[in-house]
Length: 505
Image (tube, rainbow, N blue to C red; front, side):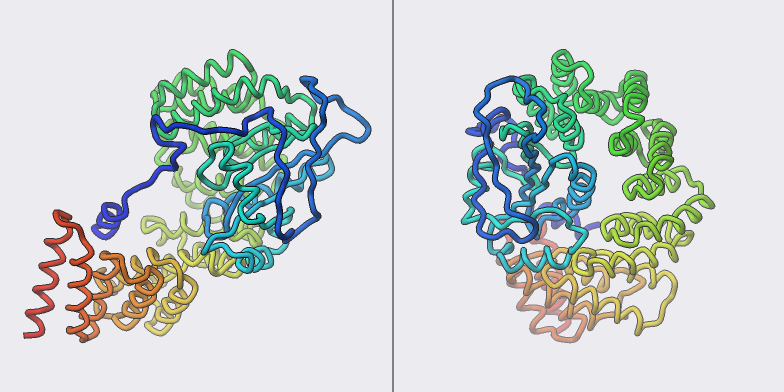
């Protein structure tokens, strides 16, 4: 815990510019505008897409024998963790709407950690699990025409282009995308109304980011005055009413009941509602509704991955241990190709308070997740190490897992530092894995460029515990030199340095 707090203080927390309170927006692309041309250097997967803008200015696109294409354009990067979480969602959306003229396109732009080669390897590695069109931006031109022009600063961000070639929606793939696409392909989407709603939606999202629940509820209610049955607005109003926000439980329960009944035939919506209502220890008193919603999903779609993960969580939260074991065992076979879902289940069951009951299931889920994406699930190796440690595995097996973690997390400095520090300081491992801790600290130092004082402190301790006191002193002095005057960690680092110097004699 000390380690995490110090890192938080040292690194700080950054909000995207568009999310900062009072931030100025310089939007040049908005809902209702013609979609810009896609400038693509390389189509990595799928067929080349060309957006055609129809000149008609009618409010609603008329149905025809050959309706235009609908494009769901997501901006992403190989290093972006939320982008990985979005991939299964886009896969599912593409599968459901492929025959209705919908094409999902993942567009990624070049940076030092996201080259064409990296993107190509990423797409190849994901294979059929990334089953939609993927494109590599031409010198950032597409990013500039879409993201920069729309005032968007964070990824993943999605732009939905309707059959007329106009921007129908801009937002997160986790917030209302399915609803928008379903409305468009069914012919119910009103672009003129969407233009009126867009500013209110942005205000709702900004208010949510700032935890300004009153402003969020007020703008959601204004939105509902324009579109009384809009699922997205109802969902945001429900979120603002929950005990964790404005604490209006009666209204929240009424809204939740209404949303569940209105969306009985929409598994994606039911699962989204279930996740929104769910809380550990049932603090929101809504887990009964959440479980009812997710069970409706599984009645219609027994193999629904997201619903199975949600249900496992709910059973764990309710401490229904026999059901957790049976349902987890049944679900692992269904989740076997979904590394992200397996990882989520594994992390849940590997938690310290649960590992005694579900450690074997957690280990199985971890191994299955690693088989699908070793690098992307490297953090699970730390959970595996801790599980095996709790099960009193032999030293050799633990060291093999540790070395594999260091290999797979070679660029993840934060994970490597946390692993090394735990090995050096936690009572169950202290003194047992000094060589392994040093290997992790060395790789961490390389990944971070040797300029992070917290990581250097860990590296110094690893050197000290391995008997290299001179190098420990040098590294600790460097760590201190990188801290600003007045930094609260300087005193602690100086105490550490004196300890090293005293040991040298």
